[in-house]
Image (tube, rainbow, N blue to C red; front, side):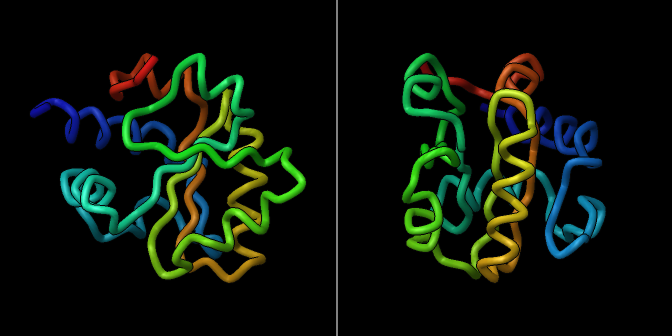
Length: 130
């Protein structure tokens, strides 16, 4: 578990180009990786997998919640999240999570970040669940 914050930090640095929140960049986040991980664990931030339920069942990141961007009720489902909490989004490749981040911005979420694709995140060492 001690390696998780370091891996998250390395991951966030390598995918900084994907970060989105009102056009701000990852470097604008004034929190340590450890603080971000702790926020997710404590429910102060969200980690959202926007892939289909079938993809999610095949494997997903620990602490994530599945809200399918292709579902008709996607906007309704994400609207249930606290708009003032950071939302870290991922999918298979980073494409759908980028679109989801844009959608969250239009729904007035304070912070929505596209952190990329599941395979890359898993390869980077983030914990996954079957």
